[in-house]
Length: 134
Image (cartoon, rainbow, N blue to C red; front, side, top):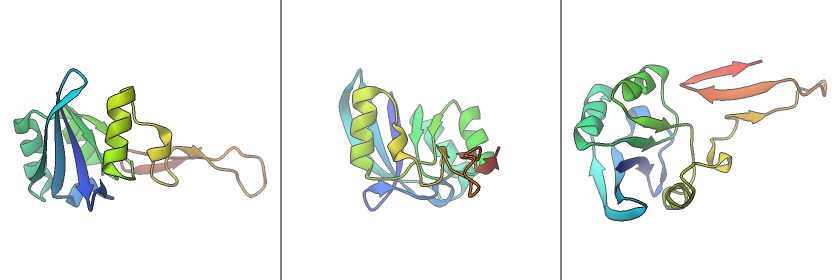
């Protein structure tokens, strides 16, 4: 299994769509067997083609637009998006638990927010490049 993290200065890059540096982590079971930094094309189609060709099965990234997310999913890549923080810390938690905890979510993404009138019915989520309120 290969996990890719879109990074910038040792952190999860804020926007996957224009990111060009990936940390690739190859796993055998839960053990890291190879870890490399790779430069990838900036254009989305080239980047997704590169990921699929490299055998990436999982992507951890910051914000991603809906069309690019759909292309990633069509390529069979599980995408954990709208994440932020230290790439090594996020990877360590992902490898230990198999999940990406909520505290790595970008601010304002997927957390309940209180409305000014105090009713607390507002919900703000980032999903596939779109903000939605209920």
